[in-house]
Image: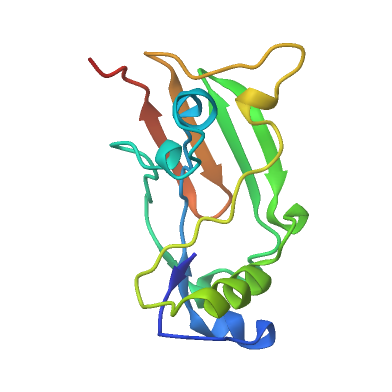
Length: 154
């Protein structure tokens, strides 16, 4: 979601009033940084090209229910993740309310809500990690799809 007007200590019941709109964000993770190199979760979310946004923004009034959006992720055409925003641990309202207790939210701030079940490192019996040349397609119904090609650095 994208914040549309400033808020600090926003009650959950008013939270959607502060949303400008909704978009797809691919919340990528570099697991080597997160798990082995530094143990620092934030660094694994902060690599060049991570967190792509788009393909477009739908305004708040164009999304009838942000808690009922189908979403999926495919890698090389295989479905890895498939879910609905109604299954989120915390609702959009709760996320905004909680974050606004910690910091002022400003217009243009982007909040990524997390991911449905099926992340690669959680695959059984063996984790699946993105490889050079993999194509990721991230889709949220009504908000569009985005494609990324994984390219190894170096």
